[in-house]
Image (cartoon, rainbow, N blue to C red):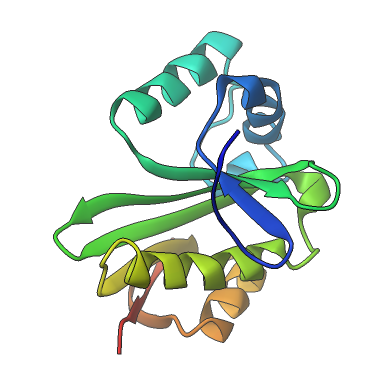
Length: 161
C-alpha cells in the first residue's frame, strides 16, 4: 500500500482489497459504527464490500484508508465525495476500537489541508447526526460552522480563507 499523504500518527492509503476484512468488521458494527453512517440494520457481505471498493477504485474516488503509523492497524476511512467544481462533501468512519483516541480530529485537520491545498477545494461540507455531540464538537474545533439543520442532521462547512 502506497502512502498518499500522512499526518502525525496516520498514513493515508488508497482503498485496498487486502483491507476488506477490516472494512467489513467496521461497517458491520451496527451499534458503534454503522448507525452513524446511515440507516442500515443488516450486515454487508464480503461481496457487497468488494463491489463497493471496486466501484470506488474504478471511479478514482477520493477515498483513503487510514493506517496507524506505529502499529500498522487499520483505523478507518475518509472520503471527499459529491465533488462539484471547488466544493466537496467529507465523510469519515472509524472502527470502534480506534474511536476516542484523537484520530478523527487529526484526520479532519489533515483532510482539510489536503482538500484545500492538494485538491484545490475552497469549501468542504459535511452532515452529522444531531445526536452525535462528540463529532459536532470535533467539527467545530476544526473550524466547521453550522449552515443548516433539519430534524435529523446538522450541516456544517469550512471555507478556504
